[in-house]
Image (cartoon, helix red, strand yellow):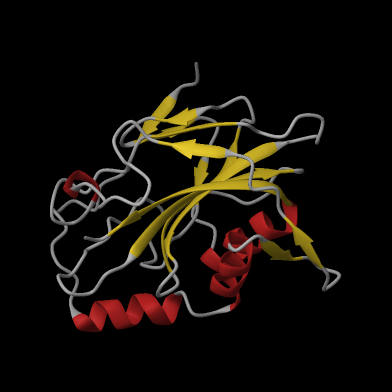
Length: 202
């Protein structure tokens, strides 16, 4: 239904993340944007007025390649091909004046953001593997790249990986490669409903 754009590659196959790199990722994601994301993902978004608004959790996010509560397939991690996953969704609220959609992929246990997409057409119902629906723009993730940064699960360190869709009541006027804090704040400011699929590291 919509044209898609192939992900830009970093040029080399991603391997395990070193402790130093993980520290840099956590530092990059520990600011206001991460706080906004965590608030949004738990059902509340900090609005400019300082009030909190409950988000409808009625959006159903699924995947033909992932299951709720099950381990994230290696194809979507640094242990495999590092592909961005396929996602489908349904149940957007009707009559709410939805202007656009956004997707955020994160690890809520350590506030790391792997992928941010905004500017999706509200008629979009899926993201195909390793593509970005058009129109759609990718913001910077915690690693500082505007693409899908595959998680690197470590044995003995369980994590959750959350794939969230947000319905927005306005457009996000940000370019490709927007800073993480800016894109998460813009998503939080406009979110009226959300849904999520959560996988695990083991």
